[in-house]
Image (tube, rainbow, N blue to C red):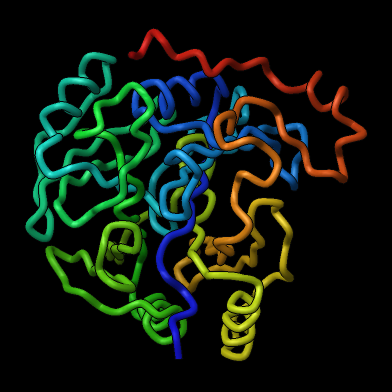
Amino acid sequence: MSALISGIHHITAIAGHPQKNIDFYVGILGLRMVKKTINFDAPDVYHFYFGDELGTPGTVFTTFPFEGARKGTKGTGELTYTAFSIPANSIAYWQERLKKFNVTVSSVLERFGEKLIRFEDHDGMGIELIANDKDSRPGWTKGHIPSDSAIMGFYGATLNLNSKDQTEELLTKYMDYKFIGEENGRYRYGTKGLPGDIVDILVDPNGRQGVQSAGTVHHIAFRTANDKSQLEIQNILMSNGYRVTEVKDRNYFKSIYFREPGGVLFEIATDEPGFAIDEDEAHLGEALKLPEWVESQRDKIESKLAKVTLNVSDYE
């Protein structure tokens, strides 16, 4: 039987000021804005999607920017660090670039034999850049970051949990993940063990519960091929006691949601149909795209959203 889950689809965070959000992820990190839409569950809030040229599953970091939102706090029951994959010899480039824009960067760290740097965005979102030679994805090479340094997509994510056993069972028994190894209390899992499918569990038995707000991750979504495979995994999860939502149509993919045992919100999203269904590939992310059911309210919605620009020339 073929695997139903193939890795990470996207990671969604709560952010603060919308323009600062664009400036950081498009301007400083050099990701492409592949879709500018709204939170389908809260239409007066933007939903931004940042990724590679086409928003390929496994590259897309998304945000709900709430202007004026207070900052959240990292803790247990949360995804605390999102790791992006960068080319093996590009750490020095990123250290210099981040410092240029006054982003405080860690010293070079090492984990499972690979070098990385760690920092936070303007809201306190935990980010890592992991240098490796395992990733063949091109990233967004038409942006202003040199192709030999451009972010190629996700490397993985760190779940900070009080315990790992039940979450490990979920990943390895029902979600096609395999245990890879342990290092300093960090337990690593992957579908193939490659950038884009890595999930680390950092066990902190006495850790304090995180507080979700700006600068924290709302959920992590895992990839499944299509509607059929999504229904299969939904049935497997429900049959084993997980409380899974109905299928929700997010226009660019379909989604189901549930809480893993440690408290992190998991989503399983289809690879199909993708972000080019309502925009030309050359102009992804430029216009505000609304789902059909609120298109008649466009004027009202646009009047409540902050004006933003994709002009990030100050960061080139």
